[in-house]
Image: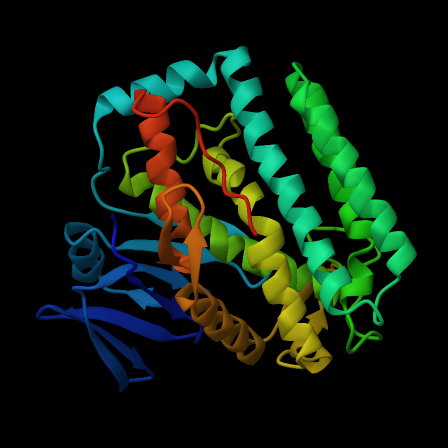
Length: 343
């Protein structure tokens, strides 16, 4: 099993990264900030206007350390990495199956079933833990509708209708998401899910966490030899990591959404850390991004029982476990892809 490795997040404008022996050296305005041995580092995520020396980029490539770039709105821009791992036969099988409508329909059904079940589990957890803080009647109505959608999904044979059920379920889920926000209601609310760009604080926070998680999933897929760009549910589009977005659907509710809610409800992030640009996009300041990154890393260190492999693992290993299970399924080593259902 792939070991959970560290990710370095660069959030300071003007940071300079270069190689010093076998260490990553980071300086700001000529002042040394830190040295980190490259062994044990998996990736670098750059959110500021950082500078990398040319030898440093080659150094990272040689050691399998990827460098991802994210803009201030939390949008993934690009990723640099070394030689692709895995064998060509697995990717040939992936590409062939991505053109098989029946296969795409069945695996998409599995992934969306996990997403809807996980959305429903988040709402049921809120009903159980905070019945006095939520609109109980509406929440129960939505959980029943989601249950119905799961039943409809089980017998569906059309990929377009599967996407339609997923869209309806997302709309239902976010229609009561605002009830889950129990603090700072004037500054953090959910009227509707919006993005590209997000136009309110809660959507900006969600989009940022989704982007972080997508980067981790891209790394996980590449680590087992899969192509993150070629998906089964999300169709090909230049620059879009479609397969990573497929796997992301399983993780959105219980990982990203619950983390965002905790940050708001526990007052770890506040409205002063967000601003609206001239274009109407809402972005976070450096300090708020730092707070979110710390919380994200702490969340990854928590443990849970994986229902399929029946092992206690760190949350941050989930993308790697799911990528490995997907690769084994495509190779024919297991009978089906076991999507992750949160309990």
